[in-house]
Length: 435
Image: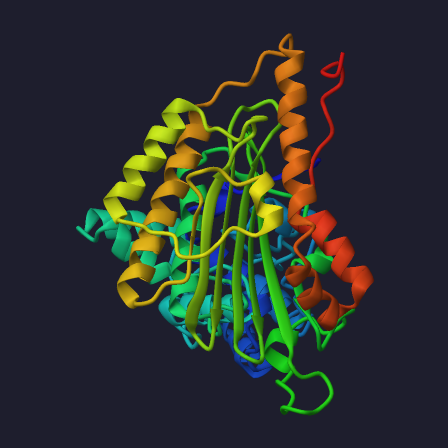
């Protein structure tokens, strides 16, 4: 399965200043007169059109081209979820300079009469965020914040859910958990890459089931209660992969009647002997009604490896977690004895659960980063791992509540495809492992 590396060295440093112009102008709706006036200014003074003015003029002509935030072109895909943008280049067709004594902008300075670099950078960032794209230079901002003495927690809190389309609509608890888990993946896994998630499942909207409206999350208004389309259901997915993890899936869903869901599963690859970390947070009217997290075992007897079990118990003791909900029948075949399943009764319990979920996610990813694959000669163990992954997915697919919510909004066929393809898919045994 193909992957797209997140790191693009050419975009890690905010471009200054002419590259910034090339990058920014397609997103900006500047009046043509601004560029025309500047064009004439340089022609009249020197007879030569500076390179940066040519680029501005060309980019302005293309500025009305709509930008698809889910574009799958090679240039945008290679940048990954942390960088976005486009550059334009071409041969310098400037006429010869007939007046060597005329003045022009010094190298590195912006031409006069145009917005300042800071204004352009801010507007570009706003345009990118409005289009559902990540801002540029976020890694550098975090590094600068660390140098200034800002704590990592404060930096992550400031970034929050970043470019998520639904970030303004979810409750604080879901926002906090989603942002911290995703940032743990990005910070710990140096080889993190995008998972090949089908485009139609990146963002799903019951008001636009075929995905014909690129900015449906902004342009389509919620229907009135009792009218067609109510309650509107919106789902946004992020999927990654790495050397150890086949799929790191993070889903956020909101329904117009107040239902909100965070769903996260970290699937290791079959050749790595790691549990399947699974968590869900369900809220209604901004109050958490269900919180569950469990490192689902990949052994026949549902036991966890000793080192992993010790880490889980130490974390649970630190955060004083107590179960007050019963595991459903389908869950008894996949959950461990350390499963945390609760209905929080106050803010303190919610806070302790969130801290535990974030800490366990970080431990899980760290252990995964250091893991070695199971030797191919251990065919029996590989078969057991495959059986455990298959068991986990098949049992999760028995959850009729999830299927019912999806089917009522998108239809039974889409619900079935989504659950099998995005939520609970498993891979087949590697070649030769079954022998």
